[in-house]
Every structure is written in C-alpha cells, then in structure tokens.
Length: 94
Image (tube, rainbow, N blue to C red; front, top):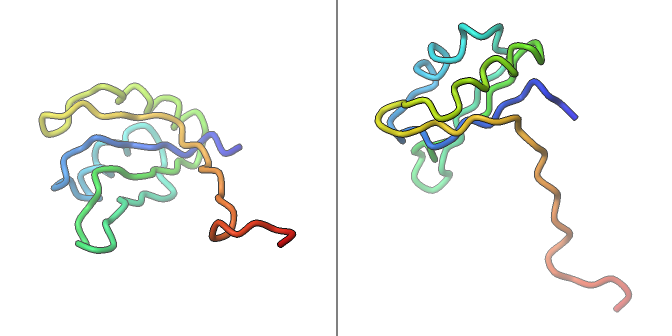
C-alpha cells in the first residue's frame, strides 16, 4: 500500500491548489497535488490528495491534522484505496 499519499479534507471551498502547495511543501517534495472538483458545478469539494516523493515527508505532514485553515480544522491522514464496487447490481448465474 502506498504510504506517501495523503488525504487532506475539511478545508474551505475557496482554497486553491497553490495555497495547499504552499502549506504542505515545507514537509518535502510534492509529486502530485489534486484538489477534487464537483463534476456538476466545477467547484472544489473541500478535499484533496497530496502525494509526496518520500513516505517520511507524508508522515511529517500529518502534523497538519487539526490545524486551522480558513477557520476550519484540517483533516489529514494517510490515503487509503477505496474498495471497488461490482457491476450494476446484476447477479451472476442468472
């Protein structure tokens, strides 16, 4: 499991990628930063994923958990893979 990818959530909807980059760059080299957007409105959903080059950098960045950003406490933790769902509710063997 990849241990250098973080979930960062509960930040204000007006936070930009560059603001997150500035906030999390001091912990180490960021390989990828993706703010998740609502596909219907095109606006940020209030969470992002940050992938660091090194696991140690991601572990250090965990200290941002609970810190204030725009009046809201950040939720920062190691990202976990979401289990895939099966097909469209169809049962096999029918």
